[in-house]
Length: 157
Length: 266
Image 1 (cartoon, each protein chain N blue to C red):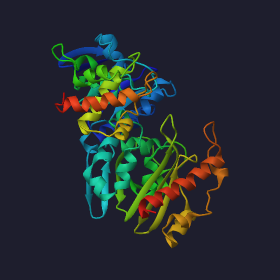
Image 2 (cartoon, each protein chain N blue to C red; image 1 turned 135 degrees about the horizontal axis):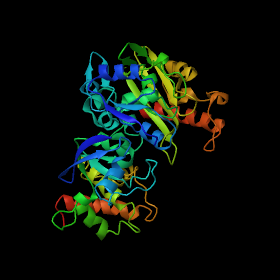
Image 3 (cartoon, rainbow over the protein chains, first blue to last red; image 1 turned 90 degrees about the horizontal axis):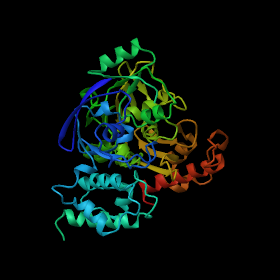
Image 4 (cartoon, helix red, strand yellow; image 1 turned 60 degrees about the horizontal axis):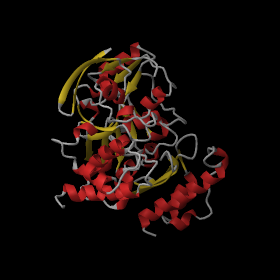
């Protein structure tokens, strides 16, 4: 067992965790933050994407102990004071989801992409979302939602 | 995952000593290969010794015709580093093709070369540029470092500290990724270096290798047309459900031409 102190969505949590527990399981089972999904368990689908110290990572491919002392943001940390994050707003407007299972990971991956490239081209969006699988949409509306996110985040209504 | 004990190393020295005392311990850096391997129960280490975030393994430096990249440098840092883009743009381009953004945010160059996956991208650049692998014990030339599938010259407990890349005059990388995994079905790194043209191939064979015939042909005439009629020996390549060895041999030739064309613009 290891003692970890991890800040998640601005709240510091101290817990004892088994060394082999994955960050995704820690978030879901220890903290009850079930917005972070586990889709494939083989590090491919990206449903479990969260931000660790500002970088998008697959939380199913990182141990909770590796996040000791880190600042983690999950999908639950995106909306502020009841208002959707602009990326969540854009996915809603553009119908960027059908079943919604991949959506938390998509949104966290998009947030990671837009941080480095606030105005990506279609090609850059596709390359930037290579770590996230969606089995419903065919990605067309997801790409639209990313472009709309970029507009909303740059202040365009 | 089978149970293991996690140890956070405070220094390379401490990590090396721990590994020497615990033969079944494994190093953990980015974990982008190791953690999926553990999840699939393909390995059962006694301990994971975490060297992620060690200051000794951080930093990119350029000078005197060389580019130094510390072992703990993440793929995303290499892909976006101004120093790398200026000195060896092909290396930044290659780093941006590894895995996906989330993997590039965690995976490290030292971990990738130490793992020596036969379909990984970095070994092509390390061998193609004639880089030196600096470890906690010695300096190892790329030719001596890579020894076939998942095998390197690293001794137990020896840790990759940095990669030293001689800055090439011109270089390019062309990759045909597997459509699902993104790993190289064939990746060819071509470099025009101070000691001549080097062509390194990853993904196609059990380990990264130099294609000497292509090097000789390009040394005479640095042009995609110089590769016409040349082929790697298919008998020595991998065959699986994704591609026959003949198909891979063709991919190697096509990727080599594309890499040269990236450089010459033809």
